[in-house]
Amino acid sequence: MSYWKIKTWGSHLVQHLLNITHRQWLYRNARIHLRKAEGLTSSEHEDIFSLVKEMMLVDPADLLPQHRQLLEQDYKQLGEGSTVAQKLWLQQMRSAVSAADATARRDCGRRRRFSSLSTMAVRRYDDYRREAGIDQTRRSNLAKRVQP
Image (tube, rainbow, N blue to C red; front, top):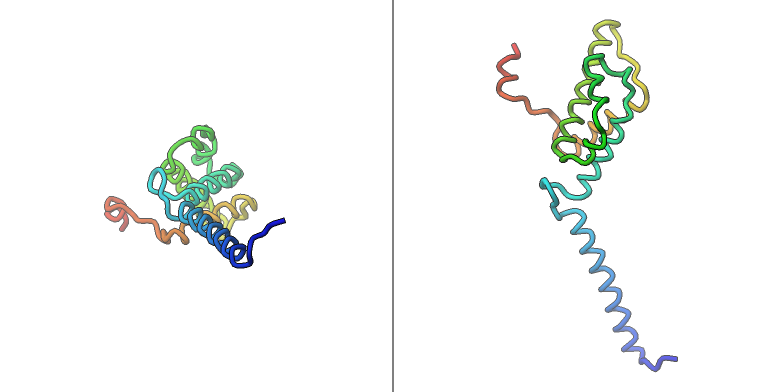
C-alpha cells in the first residue's frame, strides 16, 4: 500500500506521460529527419529497398530481349550496394518496361498487357518518384542536343 498523497501521485503521472511523449518525439525525429548514409533518411532507404524487391519480381517476358540482362544481376550485390546503384537499377528497369510497352504499342497499335507484378512495381516506383518530387526525369545537355 502506497502512502503517496494525491498531489505526489498526480505529479508522477504527469512526469511519466511527458517522458513517454518525449521519447516518441525523439524516435520520430530520428526516423524522419536524421540523415544516414548518402544523405537519405532510414525510411527513404527502406522505400528504395522495397522498390528493388518488387522490381526483382518483374516477369522477364515483360521486357525486350536486350533488357532481360537487368534481371540476371546478382541481387545480393545489388541489395548490399549503395543506394545510388539501387536507384540507377530501378530507373533502368522502369525504362526497360516503358520501352517494351512502347514497342508493343507501335507493333500492335494497342497497349500491351503486363503481368500484374510488373504493373504494380512500375506504378509504385512512379508514385515514389512523384512523392519525392522527381516528376520528370532530368535530361542531360547531350540528350537535349541529340533530340530534334
